[in-house]
Image (cartoon, rainbow, N blue to C red; front, top):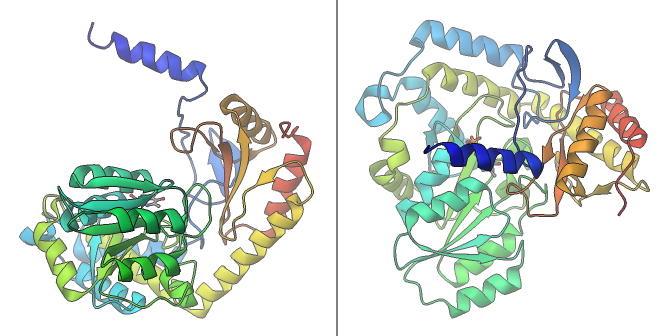
Length: 390
Ligand code: PMP
């Protein structure tokens, strides 16, 4: 039968330790999760500032639904562009320092929108090899040449740009790499974009809200200007705690996206209540309370790194909330994750194809909602699990 192949393929994945599973939470997202009736200390979520279950944000969502209703009714360009979205876009533009911003229902869709709107056949996208899956798919959708450079290797990228005969060039990178936690060399990438007259598209899914003054993101963190050749994509379901994404740029590039980006045009606008919740979350994110949350997050990162220094665990070099511990083998990482689970700790095991083969890892992600004691519990639990031989 037509579906027999699927069962074979699923069995193969199970044997290779590659089957993905999901757990159902009976609690709000946060470090103290209830899963299958059991309390777990979770280090899984991208809710870096602890805003996903914040009472003020949840109240803004509820108030927003009461005032604006549950649904938007149509796409933004038909009749779904309700006032809270307009306010949110103005806020995001002002916050990031760009002339204009456009919101999307997800970061995945924002990325699928940006690349095909800027480049097509005969053009080239220069992309970091560790870019997020949505950026990889975006390039494929654009039909531009996909020129991939080794992770953060600016010298190779420079050579590739020099040798390129493409009509238009676009440099595409995560700002904070989602499975490694390190930062892209954005200053150097911007200099290359200037020299070769290329676009620089920065996916700041994991930097927005966390890095830079007031959490303005990775560009602000590195002191980069809101250049007309930069497009900044930020997601709103991670540090901002709700869902959605935005793209910020010049008046004309945002107008171009609005006119041409199919993942913007042909989809129903998100619930207006989501925009209301995001306005509340931006209030906190940019406030002294936001600074306190970011400072606490830094303290948690330092505590974890100090706690694992000198142990056999291979922590990748990362200063961000994403603290990966590379184990290597798929089955071994599952065994470690299970060992932690047995002690009541939930840390996701990330395997290929999400990360390169042979580099399966625990992706520890920290949140301002964690306490220092939570981090110590993780360090202690890891000590009780045998680390795989280096
Ligand atoms: N870019 C990066 C770097 C990401 O890590 C993610 C989500 N994991 C996305 C884009 C997609 O964002 P969203 O979850 O809002 O679709």
